[in-house]
Image 1: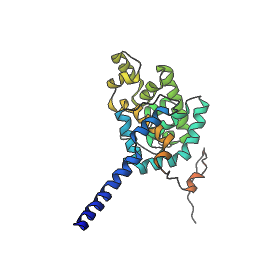
Image 2: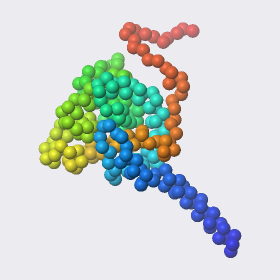
Image 3: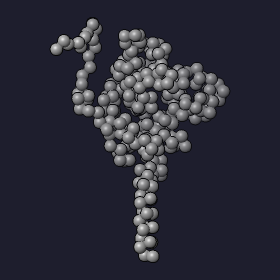
Image 4: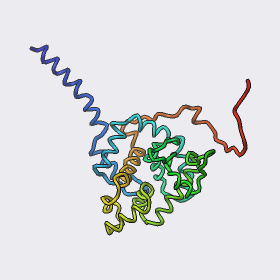
Length: 248
């Protein structure tokens, strides 16, 4: 009987250990406290059911992805910060690319948005990017970032709110303007129900990305850094025909 009880106790320990670890990695009270104190210079963070879902995805269900994103940030955040400073924009806008592409410069959506900032072809052309059969500057980290900052600045000047500017970046200024008209308010959280689901959830996704960027260490997330050769690679612009063919 004693042996049977011991076996049952051991089984319970084994079964509950993952749950305990799960809870330690996402202590909701601590997360809310950190979120309320978080110094995000774009928008005032708030904790909602949707934000919670995105946070759990990063911190629990898809930690390897979060580790890769934090690792890639060493390559791309310095570029983002350069253009953010150039246009005098809030620094935490760099986390928007996490929402858009998970910091993958060749990411392509099912509808054809491409690059770190996920420009659609028509929008990319509108903001001055070259897109043709030879070149697609949506995949150029510097040129696409410059374009993204100019586009975000344009949306902010139009709506006067970063929440609305972010929503317009995702869903277009027309959809946001119609939601403002229907909701009779320029408060994102008030008009959110009049926006398409993806756009309505875009600001909560941004809040979650900001939180992870600020607090990944507290959750034990260890960045998966790119290979050193990739980190020290320099980029150049080629203006003439170039071939890598060698007969040897």
